Length: 175
Image (tube, rainbow, N blue to C red; front, side, top):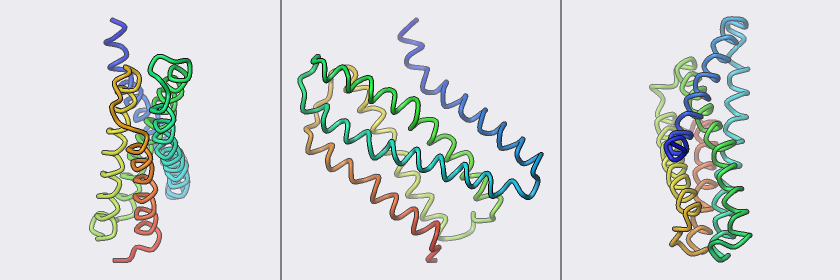
């Protein structure tokens, strides 16, 4: 039963985050009406900052974790840090960013804009990387990491590159 709860808990937390986010957003829209847009956008930006902070930090933890022996005190400490970062910050932030971002795109009428399609493609890639890092967190937790520190140093750069593209597309709207 414990194993089942562990394997379901990220999805459960994501579901809770979606429900809470949707409820708060709906209440803001009902109470604030047209004035809700900038508030939803502010929460979206906060979620993005949280998501990116975690996506930049988790692979850095993997760099250090891959350099210590499995089962060591340091390894066990990294496992706790990685799991908490993923489940308490990165996962909820990603869900909130997606839910509110899709609402903002709908409300702002961006679905037909080419810059938005490119931005959405980069966000999908970032979400795929998120999935890869989630799987890596499980592998580290089970002492199954086979990747060297160099691999994680390279992976650590990908979120920054995606972030630059996403920000330029969202702010400049070049096409």
